[in-house]
Amino acid sequence: MIRFARAGDRPAIATLVERAFGQPDEARLVERLREGGDLMFELVSDHDGEIAGHLVFSRLWADSQNLYAALAPVAVSPALQRTGVGSALIRASLAQAREFGVHGVLVLGDPAYYPRFGFSAADAANVRSAYAGSPSYMALALEPGAFEAPITVSYSDAFETGR
Image (cartoon, rainbow, N blue to C red; front, side, top):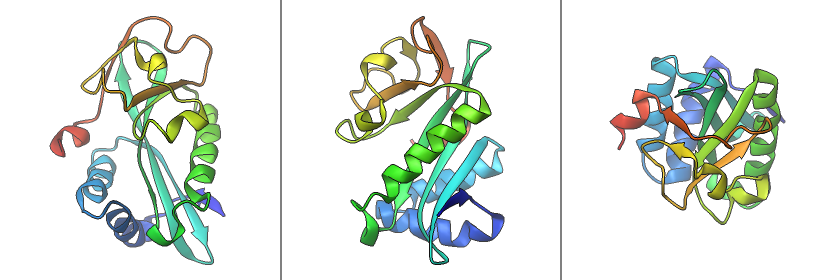
């Protein structure tokens, strides 16, 4: 079952994210995003009362009146990786982002994984940001034309602290 994260889920989320990435950096990023009020939403995959997956959408500051978001991090329990948990979370999150009115989504992730959801480095070519130019930096337009014109986006300070 995929649902919005609850405050009571936070300890389990922190443990999951740290285990999924094998280090605490991404779990700390999630905390900083929460503390800074930069989260748009968090989703979890709940398997029999256990948090099996988690992802975050945070607001990007754009030189446009449209709403843009960052998808990061996405974490799945190591025992359940490659079982579809992450894919289900991403698909559900993209549907939710559309409901929130997000114009386009950016991700810094595995170039072999994210294209299956429609993300592409080519779509991120018109985006100026701290991550621009990396083949791992990809975009997905949720509204027509979201990335056709050049756009500059800024990430939350929470991302800077971990860099």
